[in-house]
Image: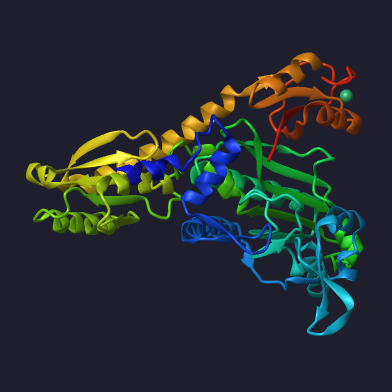
Length: 479
Ligand SMILES: [Zn+2]
């Protein structure tokens, strides 16, 4: 048993050191391995399989709204990147440059894409001529590179996987509609599949995407009360179209600029899954995203008939459409339980000689360790019911955590005190001035997370300067 104990002790309790807990979980659940390049991580099978499921779910939802996938080059010529001024200023500090091809110095530097707006704009300027060519609703699954100084697995890495959608529309209304539509696709996906409740809203000008007219965001609250921006959707208006000359001839024969959007979700969201649902024993994966939803663990596997029953059980569960594995290795059951808990498999099914004699098996949930004894004949249906309940309970628990830690402040002293002493977000009124946003960040390290769509009038004045308030904002410390 000594070794089994060691397996669990490898994870620092989250109340002791949340940052350490996070890296312990990431490492022990075998999601990633650090690579030889600083800030670049290797996604191991357990980590990549989660991303594959995210891709599958999102891609299906995208396509239901008419999205088509494409693939763009990973290099962007410097001159192209510089076409839109705000955009290049936003990304320049973290761009990686290619200066040589083989031994020859290039006549123009190429940047490794930090994002692909400029390439899509260049493409659209070539292929959009008439109103008949619109809309263009393209997406690509790829990796991007941002030369970050400090990095953390999933949350901030030099290279990460994501999808970036880029669309072009005939009218401003259509572009705005698409921007909100995609934000809702992300929000539904997070809530239904990842069991992560969200706050939806618009970013302030300070926090919006470089070159965008408006950025909308979904913000999730991690277990430690910090925010994680989980997906963004941008309305570019016709700013990029003007910079890149993307024009079309309308029905009335007049030349018009297109209106564009872009939207993205990355492997960062895996960091959110870990920090919303994980516990001191490791990862807890929501059943709908878990690569393996259940593992069958035979007890006293050496005894006659046990392995055969366990195998049969696995096949029956698999046939019912549940992603299940059988752990028939020679490790002890206790060790197998610990492993299942560390990697976050949502349920385990224990079956031993006494169970077989009684015609039953035991289902154990990962999230609350609740045990259910069920007849072997009903195992698949009962397991599905348990998984559905677990998915629902995980969402409800995360939602309670979010709303229990959503505070309100009418004056600056209360605001500062709450940010300093309570984990979570603070709702407060804001005058709309950058100056106050900067002061709040300086004084508290909290940033504006979003101006929620559902506004409340907490008071009439800005929490920081006392001038008339324009918007209610969610403030919080963020990853
Ligand atoms: Zn103010």
